[in-house]
Image (cartoon, rainbow, N blue to C red; front, side):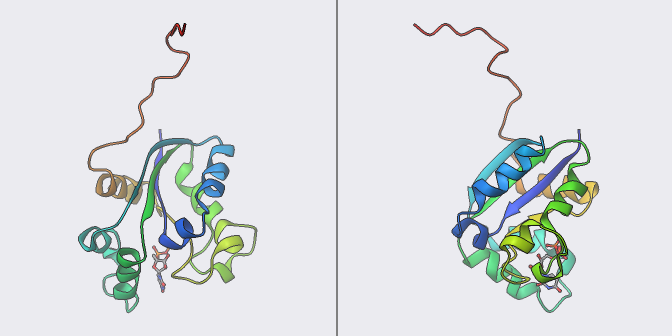
Length: 151
Ligand code: UDP
């Protein structure tokens, strides 16, 4: 089943947007397969943004992610999840979004744009391996798989 990597950026965490973002993905019937709140080491930020290493924004972006407070890293699973999550997030600059998207509704500017979602299935797999080297943190047992007797 297709998976994508989502990061709620420091501005999204500090503005308490985590529940709103999770609610939207849950309502779309995607499955949360892993989640952790973490501060980001410079090495990880540089690897995550290595595709932008030649761009003038690279240093600012890495500094922002490293020094602005924790992020929430997540793995979401579902049919066509990569493309759908990108659509729900909207384009990089909040002001470029035409329809109601997470960035349109909550983003401040192109750096403080609340959230990251993987660009393609291939990149999603790379990002999941980079951010979750320990593997997904959620297991597949359902509460009704077994009978538990609580006295
Ligand atoms: N970014 C920027 N200016 C640019 C390109 C990127 O500020 O010209 C920042 C922006 O915060 C963006 C992040 O770098 O969210 C990652 O860039 P990417 O091209 O992956 O955009 P995204 O996938 O986040 O829309």
